[in-house]
Amino acid sequence: MLTTRLPLQVEPYRLAAQDERLEGLVALEAFERLALDVGAQQGDCQARLDFGIDAQGRRVIEGWLEAEVLLPCRRCLEAMPVRVESHFLLGVVSDDAVAAALPSTHEPVLVENEQLNLLSVLEDELILSLPQVIYHDEAQCNVSRDQLTSGADSEGSENPAANPFEVLRTLKGKS
Ligand SMILES: [Zn+2]
Image (tube, rainbow, N blue to C red):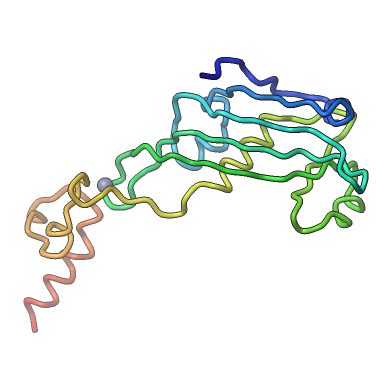
């Protein structure tokens, strides 16, 4: 079980020259954009990063991350835990021209003053690997399929998601 905390800022050129591996945890709380996108998180993101220089002389980072994030169910909007995993290959670049020369297998990461914001890199990768649409299994969801299709509980319902079906039901009643 990993307990080491990853540094949030690293020197990628030095790490690549030394073929370093960094492995450890980052608190999900630290990912502010993630929180804005999908809501507050708890727990840790586990990550491993292998720095190196490839046969073409490029500084590369081969990375992996895994985390359990809380995402809102699109049907009942309640947060549900979802396991996310990502493998990625980064090419360290110092400017846009170098980035343009990277093969499509590598995602460019811009490094200025020898410093790389690891937190930001991991957050980008995590956000990219989030599933677009998440639903509970029907048995676990707070909004059942019956409620959605029959509108059976929509009398005085406070759930705005039921409204379109209320309208449908009214239309049907008129025909
Ligand atoms: Zn649900």
